[in-house]
Amino acid sequence: MSRQKFSKGLKRQIAIEYMQSGKSRQEIALKYGLPNVTTLSSWVNTYLTPFEIRDKCVSLPPANQSSEEIMAKKEEEPATDQSALIAALQKQIQKLEADLKKSQDKNLALNVMIDIAEEQGIRIRKKSGAKQ
Image (cartoon, rainbow, N blue to C red; front, side):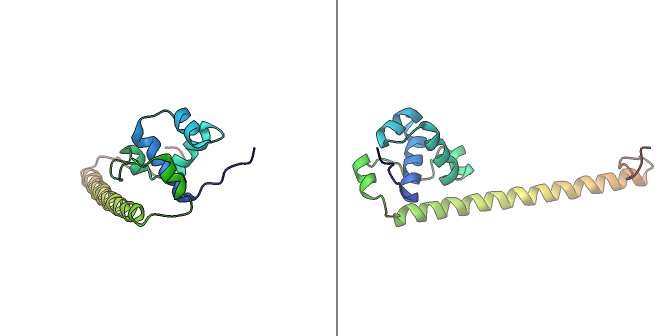
């Protein structure tokens, strides 16, 4: 039995179908003739972003294509899929940048509070070096 080769685009599409369909890994693995369910898990982790996995790929177009259509597109990378991915990644970048800014502001506020407390004689920061 020869091993079947899947393009990156098809692997991603199968991972999306698994995440959106609610079917078990075993069902999807059997549908596409995968050697085992860990292959599908690996594809999910490799070809989907943590943001997409967390949101169960709701930001992506639904995987409502038949398996024959997906198999026919084996070597093609659909442009709409790429634009949806780019949009999802841009949205994720904006969220991460906002989270980073919030964390930096929080860090600054905490350092200012510690500085004020130490000016009042309250020791908070540990001194580096040997045990005190």
